[in-house]
Length: 238
Image (cartoon, rainbow, N blue to C red):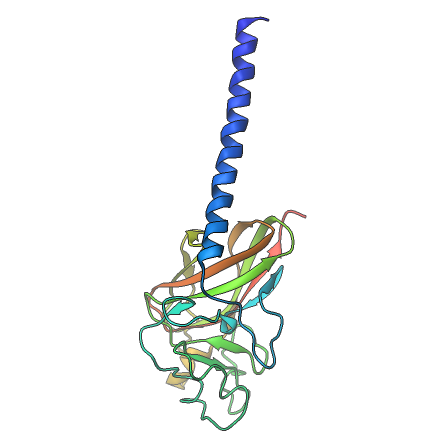
């Protein structure tokens, strides 16, 4: 057999072997992460499905069970929304996860709070969200991806100051840091409502996701004081 041809063929075979080995290594890392992970998908009396499905809306308030240092990290031990701003009155929304340290609340349509005229988009009434965020905080979301592929990501949020977030998958960076556009509007005469101007940022990132279970981590990198409602994953490469 001609030597240059043989050499080229061996190079192709070597590349295939290296690619397969790399794939097995990354797959092994993912498997090890999931095996060692002590968090669990969120479930309660109303939400029974467990791992959130992709494609679809991944709700931030349905962050994983497992507590501080496992399912999330937060700057203090107080839920400033449920049971505090929202009095513990026996209702589901007011007491949602009130004994956990991640601060959660929901959109309210009385007194033009979250249905105010300064919204860029109007959120659903009673939409749960993670709020009172601070740099250095993070929370995990267990997801089940229906089919491997590239997904675009939209975000329903508010942000008085702008800032930066990032997304990991199984402990590794999934996308580059994401700059969040401020929703502040100087025309609003009510100062506290600057934290209630809702917007959807479309295609904040594109992520390649494998089929099956993954743990996504949302990191607050800069500024904080964002309200994060959901991440919407849409398949691009159909």
